[in-house]
Amino acid sequence: MSTSLNWVGYTTIVRKEIVRILRIWGQTVVPPAITMSLYFIIFGNLIGSRIGQMGGLDYMEFIVPGLVMMSVITNSYGNMVSSFFGAKFGRHIEELLISPLPNWVILAGYVTGALVRGLLVGGVVILVSLFFTDGLEVQHPWITLSVLVMTSVVFAMAGMVNAIYANKFDDIAIIPTFVLTPLTYLGGVFYTISLLPEFWQKVSAFNPILYMVNGFRYGMLGQSDVSLATVYLVIGLFAVVMFAACMFLLETGRGMRS
Image: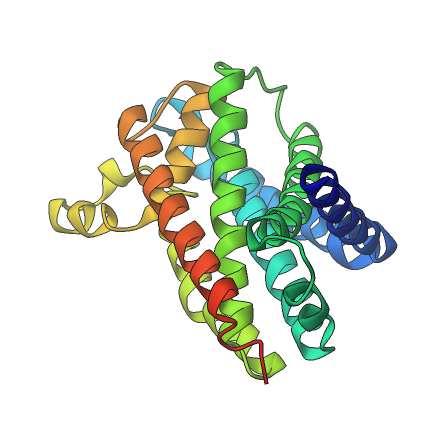
């Protein structure tokens, strides 16, 4: 009975999230497609034609994995923080907290919704990239998918932490603006860290997004600045930390119970 109840609760949350994503598709899917098209035109066609190759690859092909990962990170995080804060702001989350659903089911439902949006937007960006490249041949499909899914899950849980601590709508924009965006741009999306001076290579090693971008690039193009084992270790470590943080906050009700 408990398993059946958990499944119903989980699917209900996921269905609500997917319906929300599709209902406002003009805000969830179209803007990333337009933004990434501009990146491909400016960085790929205009600047890329002057750069030529990056790391032995055509520059346009080189930036595709980074742009896909950037869109997945942004949209997974954004979906969770906006949806969960909206539920908290509207007092809907209190109904979930007093329901018989375990907290891990609530977390899994919201994370799955964010994952769906992240993968959906990532797929759209890949389709857009086909208009600017001669075609992409994924070298390691399972590595590509696993890194993409794990990264989306990590940033979805990070978005929940942000949403729980946020007290007003302005608070949910602080982390994406002042933390997430700089880390993403400095995470090897547009360049290989081998071009950096030794000091800045060491500094870049503390940026978790660097490992996610390079892991995904290795899956798609077979090239990475870091070892694959390190990629999975870093992503797995952040997944554990974020899961523990989310569960602690849900269990204590911090920032959600008035």
